Length: 196
Image (cartoon, rainbow, N blue to C red; front, side):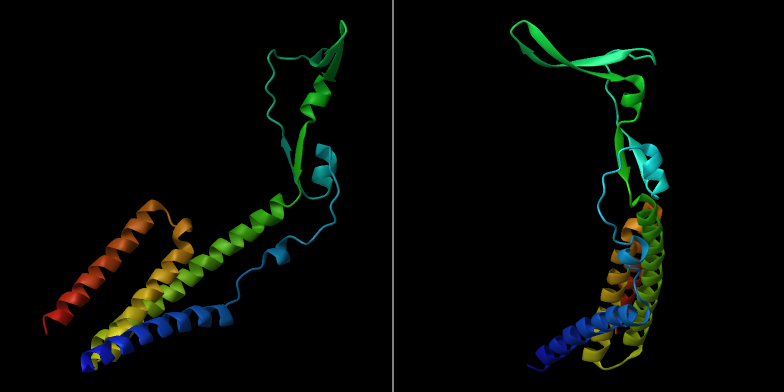
């Protein structure tokens, strides 16, 4: 029964430590908010490249699939309706075709937010991983089994939290290195702890 108490204590310390690190970071190091970068705008349809760029957006031309390349002095006509030997066509000039597309009004502000958010996630990764490594070392040094195991578990959870926050921003070799280092530390700690 006494061993069960140590296990429960260790699990509780691990979970609370990881939450403490996560909420501590959120409290003292605020995450960027999308609204601070992209202000809410009233909806208005923007139909031209010029008006899109004037409003701070990015124009995305439509990918035109033309059966035949069209020159500036030609029309491209599409049959819309055929009824009683008469035909209705929709014809567009070269200029009309090249003006087709849509305006991404929040492209540049969203890009700035994503860059800031990636930097924030990297910093959270560094802070959480650092706190996790310190908890692993302190947990390893302590002699009280339940507290020691709890701090080491909390350290592992903090490292996992930090890594998950920045996982998409890490290149493949970075992921491989982090997983390798974490695995080596865990094996070393397990070997040292279990061999006592």
